[in-house]
Length: 368
Ligand code: SF4
Ligand code: SF4
Image (cartoon, rainbow, N blue to C red; front, side, top):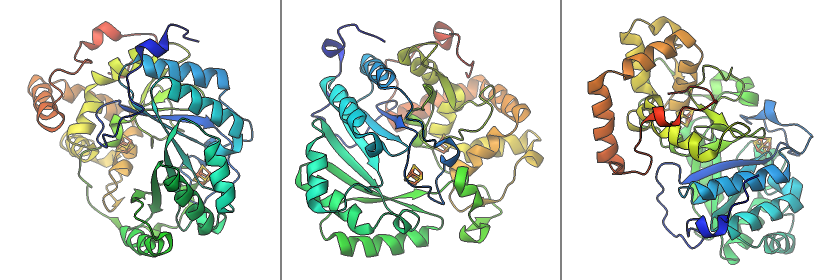
């Protein structure tokens, strides 16, 4: 565990009200692999287990490391269902807050059976700044929407930044669900859509549920700026990665905190052209290049409408294809274009991670 004077080093972020975050300023952290539900759309269904991992000691260490990056400003506690391990959750939030980090918890609100209960439990989490409640047709077969509303309203009353996350198969499902939810909540709490990616339990959803098309979804990936630490301390590039793939050739695996520090892992990721290409162009661009390079037969080329994540997963299935794309990205003019786009879109010309990847090669997977 890192025990240096973390508090002196941490960025002053707890009072941060800026809603816009840059590269690696947000971080997802698995608090536990436990969850009382087994939702039909759970992308991480295969990762849930009754054991409470990771250990509290590891989580506190990883928070220390997050503060030492001087980059991370907001930590989202996820898993699993963090309220299942309430004492641990409280300790993690208190520690993160003491480090100056904004602390968010993502929950299904099963614990908020009444408003009194919701208020009581949230009051016992000093340092919590943000609350994200998952609610949708899949969760509400097990957790009543009233519990979600109790949690959201009490969080709102206590001054937390509250959001409601609605997962959907088709965007039309989302608009309909959102409208009903707004009427029930009654106060202006932000509601945002989360497109279901067919992995984990979601692989078993009927294909007819999705708006499948023979086309290539396009768009930049904002998610790849938000890394996630899983229950084993493996750091992924985003919060929605395929977790069941072989690590060796998965460029979304950034490194392992059992082998090297988060600062080193994130610095190496910053220099990773594949990840930067996902940020400035998106997986649709990389898939198009794969087709031009003669690898089109390795792609499904039939995806749910607008699902850039499913294109991204498709690219990760084949090592030969990944090697070809990475090699292609090393063309000098392409590297210059990535740099220009980063300047244009994210003003990242002088970022603190502007350094050669050779400075950061460590024992972790060579992902650059
Ligand atoms: S989607 Fe969330 S609440 Fe549902 S099983 Fe997965 S972790 Fe649990
Ligand atoms: S497109 Fe890829 S990198 Fe981006 S959020 Fe989806 S799976 Fe993650």
